[in-house]
View 1 (spheres, helix red, strand yellow):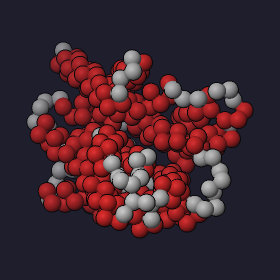
View 2 (cartoon, one colour):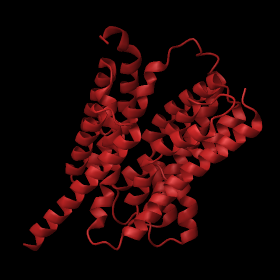
View 3 (cartoon, chains in turn green, purple):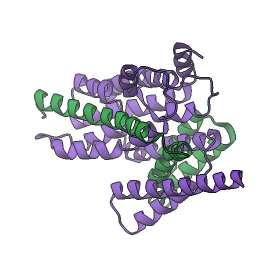
View 4 (cartoon, one colour):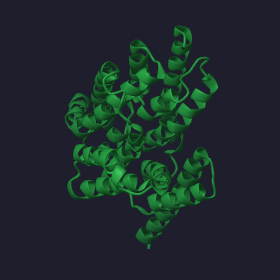
Length: 102
Length: 233
């Protein structure tokens, strides 16, 4: 059982770290903004980060996880409906697993 | 559009991710009970950190004595994409006081940033992202509280496969970004390929993120130069 003071310390530390990551990216960007042509480079960064997380996750995914990912991408491609895409993806994860190999 | 109207617009357009966040929050509440967090601890963590991935990472290590260094490192690594989100907003938060930007950046969130790129130029993006973040925060707190209260009812279910829900939500943001952003896809494709290569050679997660994002940046710089050269020529 974690005591209250340790838990409070950990929670405060987590909040500080996350807030710093939110703040520091913006202020680093402010220092770079005078560089000509930097705006399209900075605006490509979230997409690069998403791909850096997604590519390895899909590569090591089980068949049901890959199927769920395909469903999500297809639904988003056709409808942009995030709730539907996430709901279908999670349903595939929960219910397709036992019927697929791996 | 004024800041307050943009914030309201952010709240109004956040419905889809309100639901997705809600699903995650319920799962976080259940996982928090399983890890031994008390209700006030879980809710305080949600209100102050407001980061699903970072909080799930911390739960992995939540046992006495708390390994603060390990928790700090894992939360920093999974939150590192916030650096990139913040950098991408560099040109879009002008016109606000420094104090407001410092305070409101606490609510910087992935879907708010991604959706803000799809909005008209006249929208106040700091207001929009903050409104979006407020909505996500309400969803996150409410759903975690529900998860904490129903944890005992669902204790017998195997929710292990739901771990992959994180990448699924990121995929929805990727698709919104892909369809709505003016950015060309070459840097993202380069990032994805490099991430795969680094993964295959067994690089640690932080190197995969760092290496692939740097490669994507190089691709974006080359593309910007080429486009600049073409428009000059």
